[in-house]
Length: 258
Image (cartoon, rainbow, N blue to C red; front, side, top):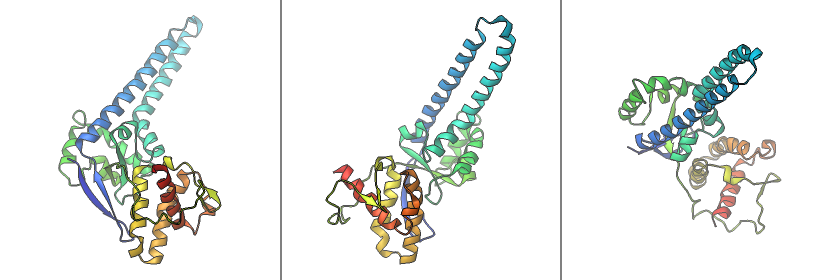
């Protein structure tokens, strides 16, 4: 049940995404649940070895603290697994990465910490009565394939796409040297950017000529801000040159796929 969606931004630019349906989300859920189970089993194994240490005088102490630590770790794995990965991996978990899907805000932007917290606090509701029974029904009953947690957090789940930069992009001005610089900084680690992020850059560059200048520059800043952080570049050297920064990303990416 995968379908497309166009997300309008306040700048009157639309970004198209393909919504992730039951199939891809089920694959991701199975992988993530298995990963959690393995981690919790590892905690139980370590706790068993801990309490079996041949230290009789400390057996009670070891048992008490070992149980407390194992309960805490199990709690963190159950509740923190999704939040940790979704924040660090820009809306993905190991399961979502394998399934090729990602969480975004309704406006098409990356999710934040609070978005992930809200979304995952309601995961038990979606899980009822067993293995996402409520979640599956809710996904089928709305056009954006949202589960309860998505409605509460204002998020959507989309499919990642392998993309190429537009053939119409002018590469004739590409520097002859191998390195690409912006704001006096070498542009490296382009491989860290996801297909979704590169797709946003591509769509901006192909549509910017129809956007009013002040709105275009504001949109370029909004798109560039998280990319600058992800590429570990100094933002103060790129302020005012965000559109050039996005052009250089397109050019550097063009080198990677040639």
